[in-house]
Image (cartoon, rainbow over all chains, first blue to last red; front, side, top):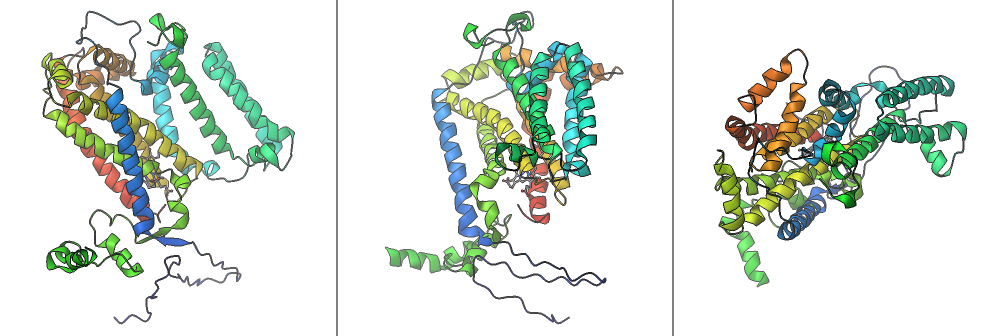
Length: 232
Length: 236
Ligand code: HEM
């Protein structure tokens, strides 16, 4: 079949070919035209990729020249180190094991985390771009207080202060834009944060706090130790 | 000199490898991308916004870069490593004291592995905070989460291989967590993983095969799909 159109011939690196859409149903004539600024991949992107990769390799080489990977004595099942620690990315989990029964800390919570991460894009609430207090502030407040209350109570029950303190601090910050409806400044900015933003930020802060505690602040018998008393 | 180079660029051998001329016009710049096997994952033009460094922080690309470094150093390490107890540990000692640059090789592999876990996590945060998980990219986000889990598993299975106290007890702690799985599932899964009830030689061989073959192959396949979908979903 013969094409009844001609491809645009264009040497302008900053223009994308125009796209047309035919809207067959009757609609209000409100079709917007938007144009994204484009650049040629070569060299604009390719050069940046090469530089980024090279800087990364240089940094790795420098670290590897000066810091040796640890190697302790040969594995010995009869000699348990105290404390026995997993690699750092699991120490947040290991810290949870300290508070909760193994099924909760070792199985349920990590599984729920992965499921929650996977589910993010499939729930409308996570696609909202409006600040969390924009719509129905009253109902939102009730729900918010009940939820934070229950979570705090559970954390208090298990004495998980490492999670309780950040949770309450973040909740307090979340309430600031509810109390003060200022438009500008930091308060205004906080007011534009959607709920999903807060939940993720809460998750990241908790993960960082737990991992840091597990890595730097836990010694024999998983007791609290300060980093200057030794890092185990 | 310049003339000589130009003659080289025009020679048949050069042209058989790089079919396009020098990237001096937008046409040849586009050809430099889509006639090149390695570059043709990219479109010939990209959004200006997405090449600004502070939009992506290059984190996805760096995750991939670290993976490449890990494959390269890992393949070299395999030349000196035998996955049997206690030989594995003596091979580590040989890497430290006998093999030229052996310690450096180990260091590169170890630090790149730790960095990759962190960088992939940061990449996830970048994607979240720029809202890039929204439709139509939702499934690529799912693949990403699986990639994050895969990355952690890669790092973790490698952790056992030096067969020192750190490895042994680090893995014991983790497999004890698995034992906590309900319905008697824990015992079964951990037996399957360790090839026994404790971390022993069978576990070492299993972790070796997982670390050097099964999980990397899975990771590569997932990455290929991930990159393909970045484009199919409309680019960054
Ligand atoms: C081995 C791990 C991974 C590699 C090598 C990788 C690589 C990449 C690359 C190269 C890009 C292009 C844009 C950029 O550099 O930011 C990208 C985009 C993306 N990645 Fe990943 N990624 C990995 C893990 C993840 C994870 C853990 C997630 C999320 C849970 C994720 C979700 C996404 C999404 C949704 C995009 C599209 C972003 C956009 O269009 O702006 N990826 N990835």
